[in-house]
Image (cartoon, rainbow, N blue to C red; front, side):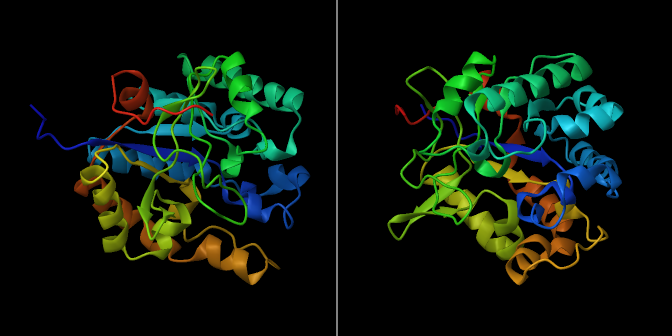
Length: 289
């Protein structure tokens, strides 16, 4: 008989700071990162407090660059029962790397995180969801590097990323790698983003909640939700000279995110990616990429 228990959804945090966002790359040189005010540790502290208050565990896709500079923060993430996963080392888009460069990036990050966290790192999320139709070799490379799953292919049409024809739910590639896409809702013959980030800040909370409910009820699938530490930080330094589109995307409703996250944690059941997709049998869409 079917269970009446609510579906568990995966809560994920991409651990990077405001100056590392891909859209800021034309305005902040990578060589200047160490001179920027880094606010990630304080923001992660606030996130961990919120998760503890809500008795919720999550997956933290963490940049190696950040982990190297804030090792105690990484250890606290693990100590409090969360999954430590990789966001690569230097927040370089996979589409900008050769296969050899990508392998070096993901092995460097994995080794660093495992040394600091004292546990295996199974998951990876590409910066800016930068795995798509033109670089699917990256999934085989991840498997070769020892990862067990990826959450890097966003099945939407977007100006910076996306693979609209990719499966909407977790699937295994022909090489045996599991891809767990960010959540979309199928409406109007297209996939609508409904998994967090700027969309969560832009849309009314009631609409975001409804979209996730439809995925749980109609598709009977776990949703994958993501956000960044800088999205709960309205006091972050404003980057000067950025174009209007980037300014809007980065700062829209940034002062409301933390309150909305608290509501989200109350309205749905949440857990780590590995517990939902690796540690237990799940209903998943069977497909081959």
